[in-house]
Length: 272
Image 1 (cartoon, rainbow, N blue to C red):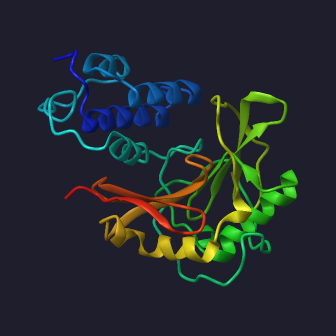
Image 2 (cartoon, one colour):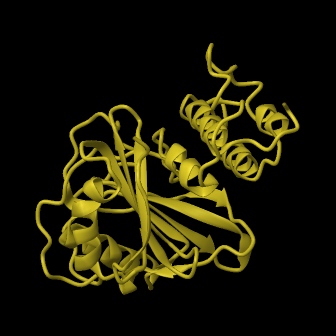
């Protein structure tokens, strides 16, 4: 059995174990990313197991569908949903669910609406303002990026309801990047490895109004009608894209992928 190809749900389970270990401090950021990447590309169940053997064993009765046999679904869909299971400032995590309350007609380069910032991520259970999941709030983030760095080009931006993590490559050092925590202002940044071929995206190109509309309708679109947590990522993969994630209190997740213009490319609804 160990030489069989791992079902997608097994990969998702492995990623959830890795996320839990990272959140508990048992893995550092580099080791977490390396193992998650390895899990996503694992070709056998044995290879997948080796990535989590030192963390904890699968729960009793979790043979089928968790390191066992089962129907194969889209690997990328299931693994991406699993990655959002645990809060992490490097970009894997959960924001507190809030629905966009207002979608002002502004552009991504609009004014600054944030106040204050902290250097540690807020608890995912704390009450969170919905500022960054509004057009005004997201536009303030883009304006802040422009002021700090002189442009709005990033590797990616992971946007939670009340804070964001922006990753930018280090100039002249293609293997290095910095993660910057934002909550009305930026912290000093945290070094992180940068994968070869990492793409970039210009945040000012996001059609803010249309993306906020997608965000408002995402729970119904991805079949997570009562989400507990939500966040979206803008990155340079597949050209440039926006990915919106929703997760409910049972850790059932769904997501959609759209262009910067708000046109939906694909929907990966939660399994029911």
